[in-house]
Image (cartoon, rainbow, N blue to C red):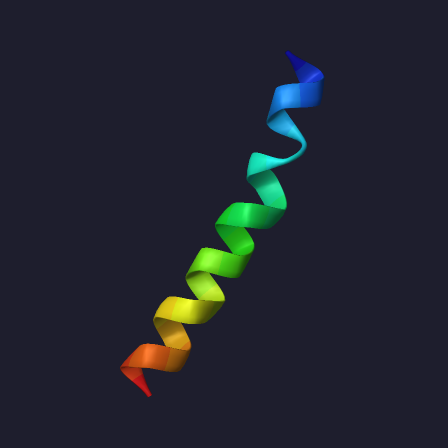
Length: 24
């Protein structure tokens, strides 16, 4: 399960960055 938790971590960060960029 640790392997599946690693990929979602960076993806979530990228999604948050995109949301912030769009809100700008």
